[in-house]
Image (cartoon, rainbow, N blue to C red):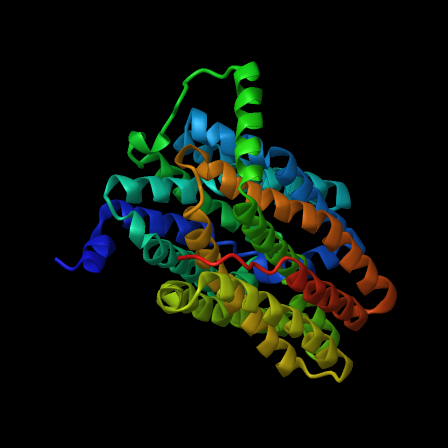
Length: 407
């Protein structure tokens, strides 16, 4: 049997794929900013909420990776979904800023305990099956299912937003797929836990933490790759939902429900093409240097931010949508490229830790960028905020450009 067909039909690879699909059924995503606006939350406060989420992720990111590597990855993943469900509950009952702070704190915990862990489980399984060299193909495939989930989520959100009593109910609807994902993880084979120790020892935990950091920071190229990925991702995460604010600004003659329908369609289309991009990006990594792809994608994102600013100034909503489309597709293609490049330099016992470190660095960038971007948007307007972010991104891309050649 062709190896690619065998991988596609593998029961656990199918489970890995559906994990991502269910995880991305976040029905609230196209409307989060609009929902927060309804409680008179400003863009600066939204930036603070994003920063709080990332701060929690930052605090728990590396510890969660070490816990996953040494005390059970499957166990940790199930715990992360409990945190997500608590977060959605607070979004549902919330009617003031403090509720959303708590919601973001639990969401940040979910992110910290999830990120890196599932990727490490996939890599461990591929190694077990002697498929490790095909990691780019496998991860691209599972990533594409995640984005299919995002697309399905966006289109379903239109039906939900039209029929539910109020927007807050969409958070309650999101709990359903997350419960399903919890039980899906429960069905994973126990050997994927890869527990090195079964009882928690704080002193030993601290020693493992120190040793892991020392090992990672000694590998300069891996560290620079992690910084490139995390900073790029942080810039995207800090501004990606601003398409909601931009369309509210540019489509002032449209009703809010019509704008919500537009957003559901826009997000759905974005994720369809992002899925295709993530699924097929391994073809690019087979033909071109992953270093070159990482560097060029950073530059394209930077220029895209500047074009968004121009489109807002001249009130060109279609140009805004097109550029956001490019940035979404590019971002989701870049994730498998990073996994492919970085995994060649990871020590086996530190995979979840390295991948968690990438998310932790990203959290630091978001903690700084998101509130500042919100403040600039509130004080000087969206165009100025996007110009500043674009220039910053362009400068950063030149400073951290990857240069090491891979044989």
